[in-house]
Length: 141
Length: 141
DNA sequence: AATATATAATTAGTATGCTAACTATATCAT
DNA sequence: ATGATATAGTTAGCATACTAATTATATATT
Image: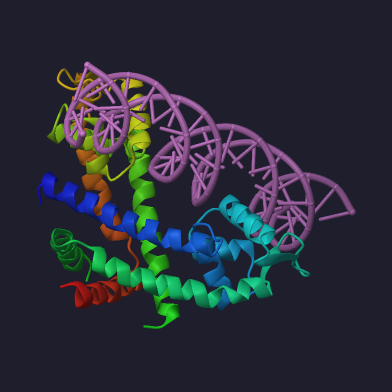
């Protein structure tokens, strides 16, 4: 595998993922959600009342990031925070009714986005992606 | 495909790509390069003297991002800027000797990183990745 | 029981990359 | 030729997510 092809693959993946991210983020803004907050909510729709540390693990991000996201979501009325009764260090995060109502529209936007993404990858990008997938399959499975 | 699995795939890809990115970025810092600057240099190693707009296109980023990267790389002595003689709006970016010397070590770090990445993807992540790849193949090829 | 260590969350400061608005130069239309 | 439009790049300010240091609480060690 020469450097030129490695470089193309890397750039092409960046291009695909940044386009995907940008379009979806625009959809989120229409719902008054910022980037990353949808994933926090998605986790709460599965496990309401989890702690901030658990959110860190699920979202693969650091504690300050969760602190900030939670602060913003609380100010917008999507969630509320409550200190754990057994362990006073722990904050538990719960959905408000407003937060619960977002589940359906966000889910809809995500599905819409996936469809757009599949349509928007160019033929030459598909070839590069297929080549990359072959390499990963060969090395990992 | 239910929501749970979609969510897992998305999170897993984020996890894999963020781990990959983090390790490689640490390698770059050892060479006094910041994130993104390696890709700008990689493009110059192919096409020395390209314009900032061309860099935007190759890197899929916006003009202000290039302005800032170029400013930083220039201050660190890896590149220099020269106004185009035909079109005075255009800035052309050239590698200094110091910039040219970085090609080999950066290339080496990248290959090292790729090897680490292949070893670091967990078995359950591989299954999720394989499932995702199947879905993409089914829809795109 | 007192001290040391570990954990959950926060605060402050920083890196990266974005959009909007601007400057300077070039090109097009009349 | 001149006024309108387009293009290259910069500046200012913002969004996201990071690291390091701090606070508060819990647990382990002696």
